[in-house]
Length: 353
Image (cartoon, helix red, strand yellow):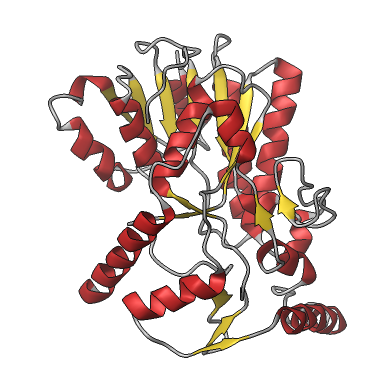
């Protein structure tokens, strides 16, 4: 990642990366080191999650440039320690595994509010890393094209996904704090982030809930972004001028179809039985599931519903035009190289299981 444009901060200014030990966060830290930033504060939740960062800190070239802070963003005191003096905050920490709405709200929304409350007055930018899951994927202005102008879920709780609900609420609080307190912010929305360390088949391809894999994506493009490309975009959104108040989608070029991805996975990783479900049938299934859930008084939760279908399985074209034009981003890892690395990692994980 070569950046010639002037930065909004100096290389010696402190920057904070929350979720620094995570799948994407560790790559953001590594990218900042390669750009010669001299004071990178890495906030992690536990000693175990700090392992990726500790390996960098042991490197003599980087040891003096990395500060590891262990804590919990639910603690205002820990947030003050983390944010003190930071000129840019890259906020990647979020609850992903929570299935309940209260847990997701606490670990994505309350934590973000605490961090915003703790930010210094001279903060130059708060980069909130969100997700494609916030989009409703309906009523798009440009037909099938999904870009940053598209509508997000207005009633996210009705989709039956705690993660979507939390991300929509998280974005809202960032915008509110930006408007109310003048905090400069940028929102980054990655698509499906993939790479070594995040093996598995995205739900946009299909689901294995019923004992057999139901292939729901068909000829749809998958909004993939390689973890290295995603980290590059997040860094650019944090340090380049002209990004305040902006939203950037992150997806790679030459996206594969769901059908092609599944074919490659079976060929290069493992073979298994799958059944293709046409789009009209999957939509009907979601509709009937909704109706039965309502009839049964939610004894069967509406996990599969039309809101979810629009988000994950509706035919869509994904745009990265704004990210390229405004920040000069381009995918450093091609889709062919990225998928090759990904399938090799999947095979290795399967062999070691």
